[in-house]
Length: 114
Length: 115
Image (cartoon, rainbow over all chains, first blue to last red; front, side, top):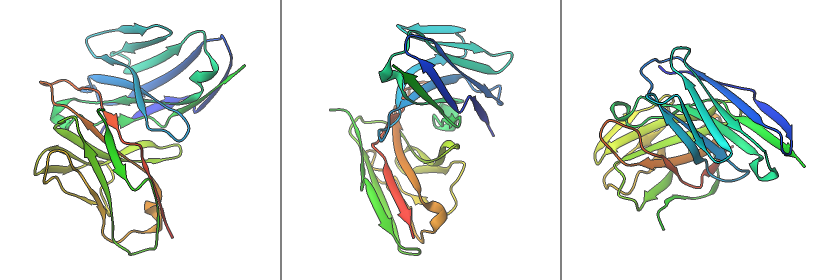
C-alpha cells in the first residue's frame, strides 16, 4: 500500500521566517496531495491541496510544490506568524477508487517564536 | 452549518466493554471514514464507506466494526476494547466527484482511553 514519509517531525522558526515541510510517497498511482493543519485540541483542517497534473499551487503565504518523478511534495509557509504554530500533516490519495482514502505522513509540529 | 459531529468527545472505558462512537454529517456526503491518530504515526484509516451499505477495511481494521445504514451516519464499534485501542479517533466525510478527490471534513475527535 501507499506509504508517506514526512520531515522534519518538529520545526522551530522565528516569526517572519519561512518554514518548509517535505513529504515523499511510494505509490505512483497517487494523484491528490492535501495538507492539513491541526491546532492543539482541534480537528485537522485542509489548508491547501494539489493534484498530480499541477506542479505548484499558491494561496497567499502558503504554497505547495509537487515533483511526480521524484514522488515528493513540499509545503512552504512564508512570513510565518505565531498563529501558524500547529501540527501539519501531508497526505496522499489515489482518488475515488480507494474511497478517497488519505494516507497521512507522521506530522510536523511547527513552532513560530515571536 | 455544514459539519461532522462525533460523540462522545471523551471516553474512558474498561477492557472488554463494548462501546460505540457515533458520527453524523449533514453535507449529504457519499464517502465517510474513520481514522485513529497516534503520536508520530499521523492518522491511519480504520474503515471507510463509499455509500449506504458499502463498507471496507482501511489500514488498521482489527478490533473495529462499522455500519452504514443511513447516508448521514457512520458509527464505529469496538466489540471488546483493549488498551492498544487507546487513541484519538476522527470521523471524516467527503463527497464523490467523478474520479477526483474532494476535501475531507473531519469531526472534532473522540479521545478514547481503555484501561
